[in-house]
Image 1 (cartoon, rainbow, N blue to C red):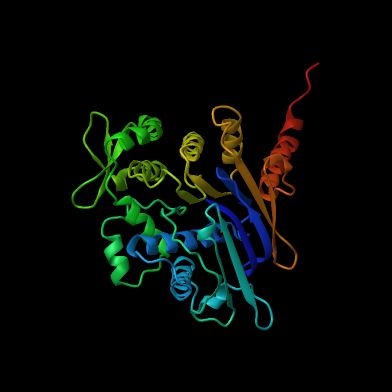
Image 2: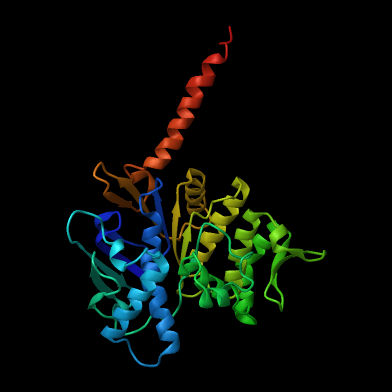
Length: 357
């Protein structure tokens, strides 16, 4: 579990010290306030460690971690020509510092690199153990339609997609669980499948289909995009990627979903939290945020939550406000805009109604 993230001079952030909960962590802010960066940064570190732990028997070394974290950051963020472009921009040379604390102290990591660095990272605190489970990153766009042949193409050609797309496609292609673990995940995915009227199927040619109950398969490209996002979540749960000490990073899960689907996605996310997965969500949807609050008060009241509001100051630096209760956040800028729009709507149209005598 990721417990803390300290960052100095990284992209739009000058200095931030974030404390996370083991359940739901929500980043809220306007466009350009670094929400996605706060998802990608810890994801890159977790993914790098899990990848190395899977293919190596030996413990981490400082030199190996320095090389691999630089490669993963470059792959996930895709800076144009050098890693140093991720350092906060200002006149002269600058240096960013990153420190991540985990529930397992032996996996903690700290590193730094300068604005002139091409691919050089200096590790100041090296882990002595690798992460034992890979994280999952869901971008704003669904991935089921691009899945056929995407991974081998990504490995052999230069594509303008960041590395999270490849990583998640690898997880989508993993075999589904069987036995007792299959029964465990069925409790999570059954409500989603009932809502969709079917389940997701991966055929031998590497193509996904929606298999409606009692009907023939439907090509995934013919399924509404909002449903494809739900089916992506169903698939990842069915393969066990979102169970047992895992981490889910989801960028704007509400994108391209109608309110009914947003309600189901909110419930599924909290169900994943309840199953022991730490979840990080970036959003600017007041509807999703309110749905989380409703569900957390009722059937998911044991799931811990923490909220982070991001605000860009006049000098371009983003400040981070963090609280355990959403109503304690000040300012919650983007959501305030939605509330102000409601006030403007009432002011404009309510006076048109004649008072009754």
